[in-house]
Amino acid sequence: MNLTTLQQFKSGLRGEVLDPGSDGYSSARRVWNGLIDRFPALIVRCTDNTDVMRAVEFARSQHLAVAVRGGGHSSPGYSVCDDGMVIDLSQMKGISIDPVQGRARTQAGLRLFEFVSGTQALGLATTAGTVGGTGLAGLTLGGGIGWLMGKYGLTIDNLLSVDIVTADGWVLTANATENPDLFWGVRGGGGNFGIVTSFEFRLHPVTTVLAGKVIYPLKQAREMLRFYREFTAQAADELTAYASLVTTPDGVPAAEITLCYTGSPDEGERHIEALRKFGSPIVDMIHAKPYLKTVSMLRAAPVGRSYYERSSTLEELSDEAIDVIAEYGRARTSPFSQVLIQHLHGAASRVPPTGTAFAQRQESYILGMFAAWTDDQAQKHMEWTRSFWTDVSHFGSLGVYVNFLGDEGEERIRASYGVNYERLVALKNRFDPTNFFHLNQNIKPSVK
Image (tube, rainbow, N blue to C red; front, side, top):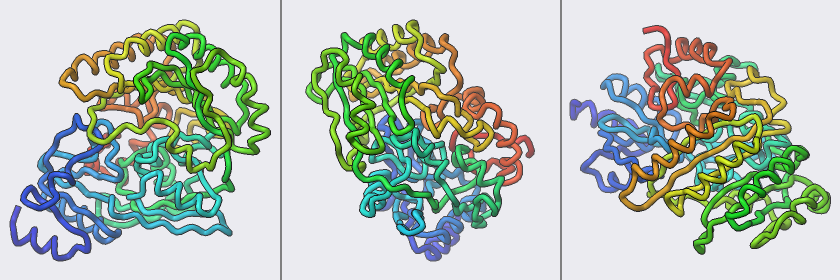
């Protein structure tokens, strides 16, 4: 890389450029998953669209691989690369809210807690994820499962418009009337078509919700999961409930049901009456609370711990599948590992599979198998996840939620997009025919 060319590039940016000799480089290259340890040649901390455009142009001219970082929460480590350029959007945290129109425009560097905090200040919200430290951009581009999805759909169902920097260095706006094919593709198609720098969302009045968790001893996992199956089968749109097998912060192996009812807490109590009466819980922590509190109900996975995950989508929770899930929940090789089941239903399940790039629209259960550890026994913990996934895949897997997809190859990516895959390839051919943006759950172009 020519030093004069590099200096010219740096001088034209509003943001900063870090290289291996820069102060702050060591921390800037780190991402959420401590298993990922990569050394990019350059980290470009962008402040606006122009910075992103210039970074894309420079990377292309220098034949540098590009990783795009929003929240840095990509489990397979796609937010950073060896020897190439990281286009870091984490400084781009602007948010503006129109409470009259019920809309929010955000930049791509926001994390969920920042976004929800901003909208909740005005008594508004839209579907977001469940862990506050997750990046808003990555969550959205992969679909966006969250507590409000039964009532208001996925995050992408509330997305109105994006600005996106394409591989040729141009900024395009994509919405229902302008570049509608591209707008269809970014709603679930990840970062395959460019770098989305801003999002416009539809907001809904949401203030107090009935939310929290009921914790049971892990030995009751089978019974709890069977109850959870029946409980969610009758769930109203306003009620979204997850099940998990975890170890509590004080070291107790546990089975949990965590929920959020979006509506009157008094009405919500009627909908969760059966849960209040079920089993012998260690503790019942469900009560009325501000919606903002829901993004911390599930335990956040700390930055720097090692992570490895697999996921399946099940049409139903059969007794046989529950037996396997309960068995592996007890056999977790690390107290930090967990099993999470998310119920996709209601408004999120009533969009046609071809309505957006996100194809997994039928009512279903998204099963996440998350290994996490701090010791040097990586293979043991990863094998727990692989074996779990193999054994549960016998129960009619429908595909995989792309945001829970690891580095698992093209076949699994195809499974994620199902009937939409060929249309996504056609979009890739149009907007990124050279596969410039390939450090992602990659949809490969069919043209060269």
